[in-house]
Length: 219
Ligand code: G16
Ligand code: MG
Image (cartoon, rainbow, N blue to C red; front, side, top):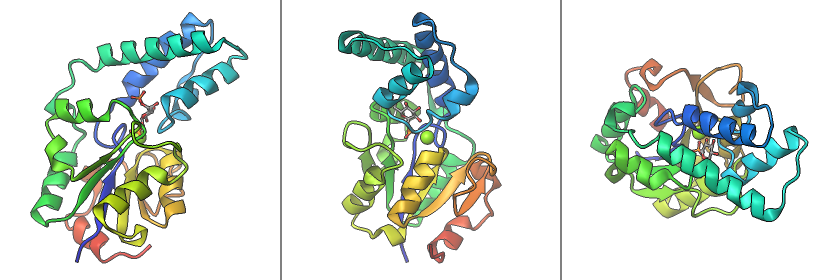
């Protein structure tokens, strides 16, 4: 009895969302744009290029393609500086144990992230080798809520979408999993992630035998 277990990165495995927020806020300030936490919420799971497009849209600003590229690079440099000190202690509560439990049960594990920095982040956290397949922002062309990233992951693992479980913290990611026909588990606020099949604040809030529950669960 097996399923493909697919994890989002930012906001599920590690709280890099706060660093993305700081980097985007500095970037927006450099363009004289005010950027709020509510707006940041809407950028979760959204690719770097689409995030900058949205920030410019909200700020009613237009820039040349050259400036656009320079701003993207600037944001990523700031972000990389902020995540320099990430290590095993930054893995969100319960995630490491959950991954190890999946390994013990010989369940296939994949990463499905929009981030182009996913691989170096997993390395910093010391958990890269736990993933059988990594699909990230360097592999996909269509951003969440398009299901491409998750379909690519379950495909590579050799599983059907119906036999796949996705863990997501973003609305766009939950929608992507649902569109693919996968079981969607939201991590975060129930009122924001209400489209998910089930929502938990943290992995530590899941019932003891949750992996077995998921293995016998249908979409
Ligand atoms: C993450 C974050 C987004 C970020 C995107 C791109 O997605 O949630 O806020 O904009 O990746 O990241 P990068 O600039 O590192 O390529 P996910 O899917 O891991 O939550
Ligand atoms: Mg996320």
